[in-house]
Image (cartoon, rainbow, N blue to C red; front, side, top):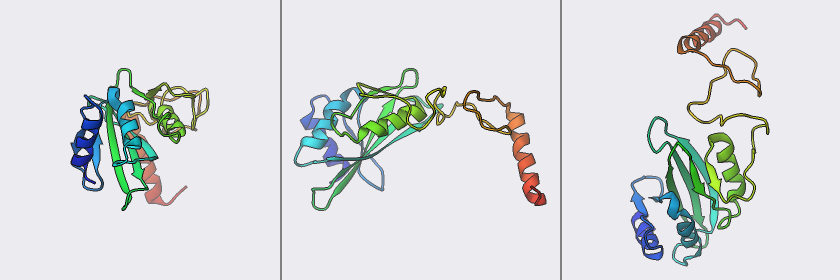
Amino acid sequence: MDAASIATALNALVPGASVEALAHGDQPTVAVPPSRWPAVAVALRDDAGLAFTALVDIAGVDLLPKDPRFELNYHLVAPDLHPPARLRVKIAVGGADPRVPTATDVWPAANFLEREVWDLMGVVFSGHPDLRRLLTPEDWEGHPQRKDYPVQVNRPVKTDEAIQLTAEQFRANIRRDRAVREDGSR
């Protein structure tokens, strides 16, 4: 099963889906608009020719400064096909108010995966049954895997306050750390 045949099948199953096949060497990849994701997800799972019944992972990518800023990569498996098939679904999400419909109704495994992406990247999954922090403390502010999240360097890590460094302070810290390693001290 290649990306073009999957995209063709999905566009036939979901009117107005606008699914696009993408060229990726490692596995079939399709792009889906966020608004059409719920219907496409159901078709991926329920159509006998596709049968992507297992959601393995969701990876969030911050593409700052590009627009759309975020990209979600859903990794699916069709274990009942012979041979089993894999599929990557890419969803581009804008940065101003990053939202995409939840996939928890289609694949229950999406629950914790979407919570992780929300916690670390700040992408909101509309309709999620329990969207709350998963990996960071409940009082954490911000989303630490965003490219514009403040870097904490040269101080003990605090969960209540991020420090701001200038570019020159950051470079000075790196030079100092390299010099310490080269001297063998520490």
